[in-house]
Length: 350
Image (cartoon, rainbow, N blue to C red):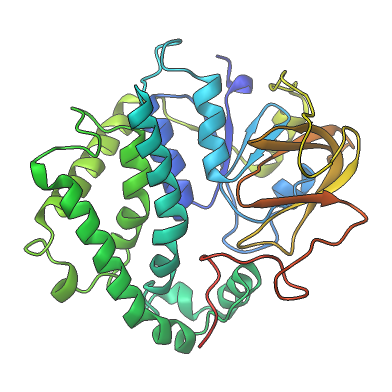
């Protein structure tokens, strides 16, 4: 694999989702390049590629841009199978494991992340930054003031203790990893990433409620997870660090990777070549990616658009789950008369 053929990961290094993808790439041993992005908008590098999606990480595979960490992992699993190229296999080995893997993926992304966001300590310097507060309010659709966060924190900590107890019960039979394997698997990444990230924030988990004495199995599992990732990073190819302008140039000179371009019959009634808008249902729904629909399956939607730099054709990929795709001329129906649909990610300020 030449450097130009490697995935390019656009990330903010301390993002929990970025940490998840970095852990996955290290454990798999997949070579990649990384391009650091600003914590808050604007993100000129992605804008130059014609991407309006506001969350990171985002992965470029040639001129195919994959949005949402869950789709990124699915696509990397497809393009770099464990049976080829010497890449380590992490994914489920039977249908039961697959079911648990996918359920844990959704559990942390939706159920756990709701209280997780509310336990972020307001003592962090970043949480006191007005620019960060404003950016997150636009992203989440709720106040991120210290007062709003503190009001949510007690109930969120109680919820997180229940999540810890669930993990403690899963690990109570002495297993080292979630699926009972001898090494970390994709199910462990899907389960651990958000807890591991929160442990890195001083004060996120008060000792009196989340101690090693109360949850010994969960703490030991997280320690093993970190040790495995640290070892994998030592063994894996070191990622290339790209400046934004170099990443954009490399991507615009590349070809498309996805050859399976088709629009299936769909309950939405959307047709091939139709101009559409795509956006998340939970957070970041005010920024939409628009273009000509060229792929639509049960799991993925893809539009063809143009880069702002050089006007090259780009393909932007979204997952179907938890995302909306509508004709460009049609306003998406919402459950509050105007804002985008909400699920557990978006917390009202009580």
